[in-house]
Image (cartoon, rainbow, N blue to C red; front, side):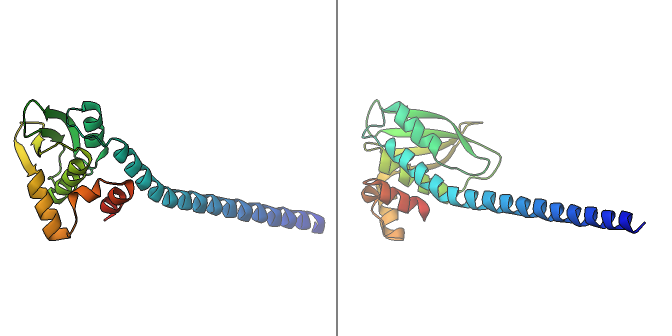
Amino acid sequence: KKKKKKKKKKKNILGEKKKRKIKLIFILVLLLILFTFCGNKQKTEKERTDILYSYKTEYVGDASKVIDIVYSLEYGKETKPNGIEIESKQEPYGLKIYLEGKESIDEEKLFKNSVVIFSLIGNLSEIKYMKKENGEKIKEFDKEEVRKVLLEKENKNLDEIGKSKENLEKYLGE
């Protein structure tokens, strides 16, 4: 009987050691995943800026780059662009961005996105954000007005933001 008890005790001790090892491995894997995702967010922001900056163009008529810029920006958790209209037949050159989503539109986010768009598209003069559902205008931004507000409120130069990846990344990170 004593031998059976000793064997059971050894099995229990071995079983507990295995359980501890498994728990330890599980915790280490979770920590590794956590650190990986935390590090990737910063990398993703830099990659996002690199991608955005690669679409920089002098002309609003460069449709593929304009589309890529518009669709690379964030408009809200549930708000997304769903179509654009480029107005490039005569000056002032404009861009209509059709947005759809259930949430209310954050006008500060639209302003910031407009700064990015104006800084990356050289001859663009105005941006109109429209509701996709009914074509109603949400907000309109004029490049010169944005330039003025940006300088007065944030002490930033619109032209400088688009001059380099670093400047764009700095602006997006704020």
